[in-house]
Length: 194
Image (cartoon, rainbow, N blue to C red; front, side, top):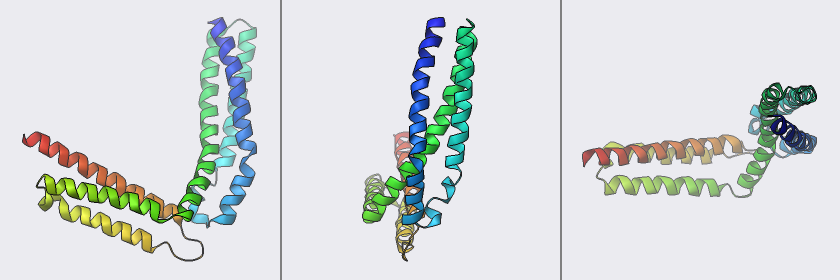
């Protein structure tokens, strides 16, 4: 346990540095988000920098306590503290990554808004073909048609100088998840009917 604690201590030191580097790169990311996109595109991420700072500090604190436990020959305590440190560092890293990922995704959809729409419509058409093939149009045809209308509405809302691309992407993701559920249900009904 002593060796494992010492090894984990060293690897988490690297993780702390990695998370700190991600955090240090966030100010320009945050600035780009606010400069390039309207507020609704990232309002849900407003607290992420503060959360990352707090969680990194907590993780570092647990890591330091684990170091003391290793020096005091308490490897089991050290491993427990390191597990907690890892949890805090994961939250900090995820908070950082959410901002960077959002900026990348918003830029991608701004460059090609029709890309996510094409993907979503393809999934709807695929589901419609399945419903026709399985003779389930009466049950699911109008349900899938309604999903196409949701895509139309989402696309029509991409207006103005600063569209809410995130609402658009979220709505398309919701449609995709709904269609996937329909496909699973149709396949399940067909399996049961055999």
